Amino acid sequence: MTSPPSSPSGSSAGASTGRNSARETVVAMLASPELARVLALASIGTAVLAFALQRTIGIAGLLGVLTVLVVLAIAAFIARRGMVDWQGILPVSLLTFLGWAAISVVWSQYQWSTLGSLIYLGMFTVLGIVVALSRDTIQIVRSYGDVLRVVLAASIVLEIFAGVLIDAPIGFLGIDGNLDLFGPVQGLMGSRNEFGLLGVVGVVTFGTELRTRSVPRILGIVSLALAGLSVALSRSPVVFGVFLIVAVAVGALYFLRRVRPDRRRFWQFSLLAVALIGAAIAWLARGRVVELLNASGALSYRLDIWQRIEALINLRPLEGWGWIGRWRADVQPFIGLANPSGTVPSGALNAYLDVWFQLGLIGVVIFVGMLSLAFVRSWLLAGRQRSIVFAWPALVLVALLTSALAESTLLTQWAWLTFVLCCVKAARELSWRSALEKQRPER
Image (tube, rainbow, N blue to C red; front, side, top):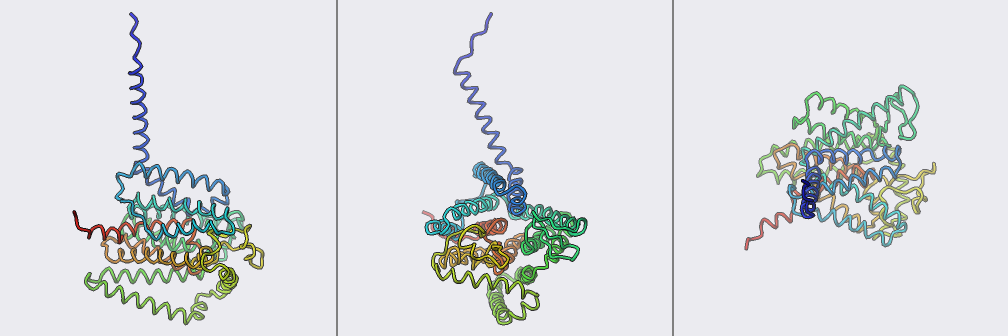
């Protein structure tokens, strides 16, 4: 006997069940903790290695990697939205700054470059937000620890290869091969200042891992030594200054965390007063400070750039020339800012002045407000929370905000992603809107 033909409705139901099963499998994969961890590592690693990736696979290859990561990150976040403790609250200050940067395309003198730079900035912003909302602070610290261990170790290995084994620079990676002279070295970051700053963040990260016992003790000690070596070999006066300020911040936090809660506010304001007095003294004695840090050459170079930028700022003081992020060597007015050797710097070597140049006085006010809110929230959390892991965002922000006085690194790539991550984390834990919601009487 021949079996009766299967009914169309049965085939349709089977196909529908198959599609539902496949969709559930994809959603489960996107929502898995393993994928969240891999995405965090890939996002941070790509941001940190953006310079090296651009030099090896080109800007098109880097943008392709970032595009894939952004699509995966958004898809994973949508799949995990029910598991994320989030009520749609993002820092208003961050959104305001991004909005003003986006609006600047209207009056920009280089609109297509502004549009491309905004997309580039937006990619790192999205990755930072997704990582912040998908991972706990300790998980983020571990991700940074894993990435920085690999990057700093690989940088030292390449410096040994260039400076000792072949005694020649590796031009396409920007490595000068000065290790035999004990620096300065650039590693995979393209400049000694960025390499040294990454080392400072590494010191904070590896120290946090040691204190939280999240890695074996020997691994933590070796990692801490590697980060310290990176800071030393950078031979950067800017990095040495940042390292000293971070060390002072560590001491201040250590003290605050041991003060009775009812006395903590008094000591917070006392430390703020001491910090302001210290900053004023440092400014008045800036000549001596520059001499101690052996930074006269670096300062002279920066003063020359700042004086030339000042003339352009005065032409558009309120709204700026338009967002660009890293300066473009083929776009006016940056072509006219080339140094005597004909090279256009990558930025104004001062993030605050760079924002004023690109986004005007309005932009720099928004920028400073955004940084201040993120830092104050992170600092308060670091002082009041029991877990030492909450000190990591505050200390990392100290490093980034201090380095911004002499570098524009904060405005792009790994430094911007790290800032966004710390900003979102602080806003989630200490948001004025959440506090208002809690105080609102129930109906």
